[in-house]
Length: 211
Ligand SMILES: C[S@@+](CC[C@H](N)C(=O)[O-])C[C@H]1O[C@@H](n2cnc3c(N)ncnc32)[C@H](O)[C@@H]1O
Image (cartoon, rainbow, N blue to C red; front, side, top):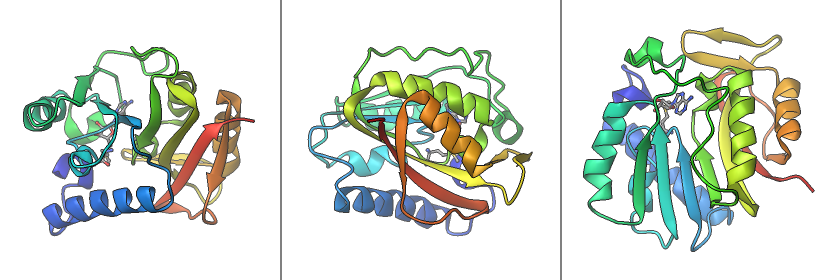
């Protein structure tokens, strides 16, 4: 939990559990997560979203992350509970190394995800682009466009800068216009429900296939 919530969060189990539960409630309330959905959880960490999906009527769940220990833990804890759930470790390089010490070897810019076109209906990237430079996010968006079915949905969060893009420790703050440009270049339309906030506050986006 420290590896995904920060070392100093107070009431770590409470923060972890509440964030997963409230995200699920919201996704179901607004109809973004549907019965039978094939779910992809990019940067799934230690299964904050997976654990709340165990009782949901989804079609299946795949989570991946570049941290081997968290994936091993998810495989042991969730994989054995429900055969619909699969977890994969891909040894992708990431700025997150400064936080958890795992360097990785695979270049995220050329990392081709091992799934066919239209393999998923719903993808989540909860606080993942917040730790990736924009060009890496652009590469992931291209892969998302390929693996998400035409009627599918992508839900993700990003941090925004007040002015020019910058990074600070493991956090990346994009310019909103630059982020919207890479979303459109990947072939997605985007919906935001609130005006952008700057700093280390999550801006949540819903992406759908353009047109
Ligand atoms: C703040 S944590 C969020 C984890 C999870 N999504 C959650 O909400 O609990 C960020 C996660 O992104 C993963 N990550 C960072 N860069 C990544 C990359 N290029 N590909 C896949 N996962 C990545 C980290 O290993 C970490 O588990």
